[in-house]
Length: 67
Image (cartoon, rainbow, N blue to C red; front, top):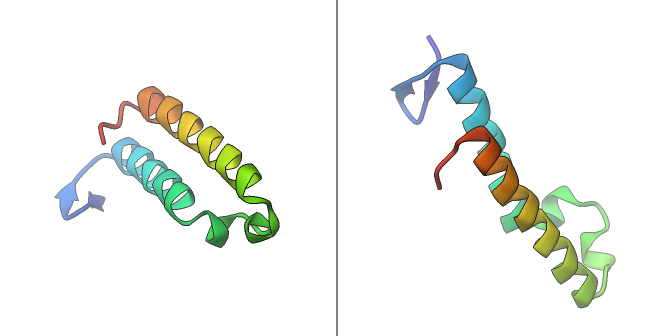
């Protein structure tokens, strides 16, 4: 039996929500997931976050996940 947030779901739904959750963590805590993030300039960090956000939006649309 597969569950996501205490709800019975298919493997596909579980997988897409897990990917979505990871992308949100990557954006919210980039230093934990990008090894050299803290050594980058503020401008470079902002540019990376901008692109992560764009990828996150595209992937959420592709997966059909509503935030």
